Length: 147
Image 1 (tube, rainbow, N blue to C red):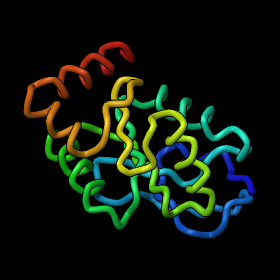
Image 2: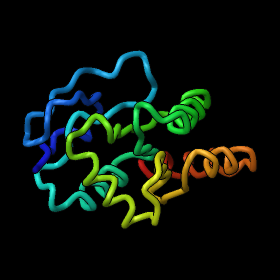
Image 3: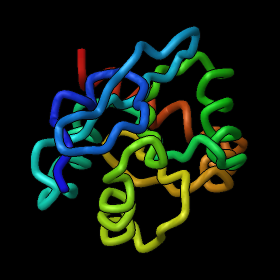
């Protein structure tokens, strides 16, 4: 099972089965952008995840039915911060990416949130960093590096 690589470029995924048949439609009215498909090789999900993380200041690996994911996305949206969303449950090969995230972060739960190339945790960890005044500086640091 493989996924097409064009995805991590800001489109919303729809279920259609990976094998390079992932269809996409534009993410509408949201500050975050979703993934339309993921890399050509299912044998390299870690590399594809790392590429997405390095190309975006904020990446949220999410599931559409997860209230914690919604809460995390809302935090970034409310702060006016652009973020990349990868909706794992919208990909047939999403379980492969979730397995890779487990290997990278030690947990299978979602959301898995990365800021400035670093895994910061889930929704509770992200809200804690925000309350401590540490989240926005991490995001700003990334945008300064990318200029």
